[in-house]
Length: 96
Image (tube, rainbow, N blue to C red):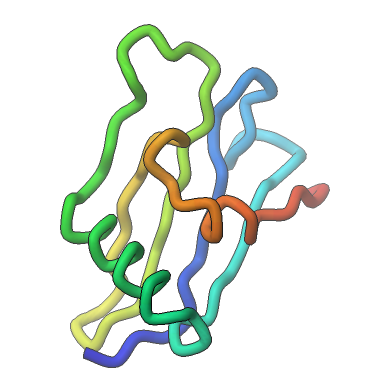
């Protein structure tokens, strides 16, 4: 299965990052440039589906991760604790 860019957006947290905020936290990874281990970690994340925050974890971040597949875009929303560091590290804050 050929993949292209993976888009990441960090949402929530104390500051309420996301679509309603003036600060957006976004990142992009080129799937083909990832190591085999990172590709496998990302594929496992998508295979597991969305991961909700831990119970009682108020004001934590969530990551919306979208990848393009031959059958169209595929998105999941993952709690901060389940996001691999190479995915979280790709995100940069920007003013909208």
